[in-house]
Amino acid sequence: MRTEQLKIRGAMPADAAVLCEFIAELAAHEGRPKLATITPDCLQGLLFGDRAIAEAYLGYVGGKCVAYAIVAERFSSFRGTRLLYIEDMLVRREYRGGGTGKQFLAFLARRAAGLGCERMEWSALDGNDVALGFYDHLGAEREDGVVHFSLRGDFFENLIRFGNE
Image (cartoon, rainbow, N blue to C red; front, top):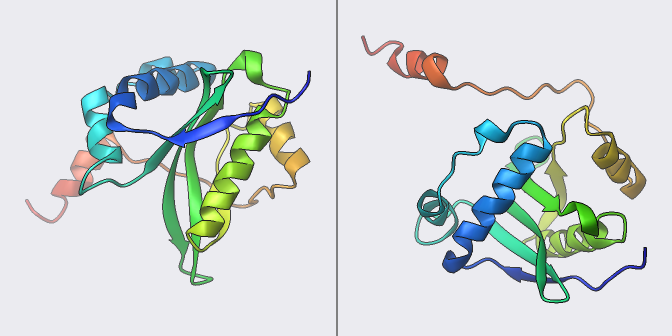
């Protein structure tokens, strides 16, 4: 498959619905479709305006929207450096394997460097062999010995109440 030129632009508030479609597609791709409950209104509040906490980008090939990414700036307390965290990234299946994903990551790397970031980080499901192989091929390092946690639902609510009862 030949590499087609990817054109990338920053998402705008009017793109919230298409971003939500991509998020749902990513959740389904990961086998977790029921987790994608975000609405366009909620996403607009997170990505645009005074309290924005992340940025989103859309990628186009031949005028067709084929990829997206949501990123947020973070920092490393150990190193005292900035990093760009890729929260989400998806290239639609029919555009994989032809360089589209690498072009998108190269764009994000340039964005990170422009923000003064030393590196980028992201996570992938341990069973997503295609993505893991792609990231290995790029030279991305796997962070051994780190387990990511999530606290939600009743456990999150119980912790909020702890000490305030």
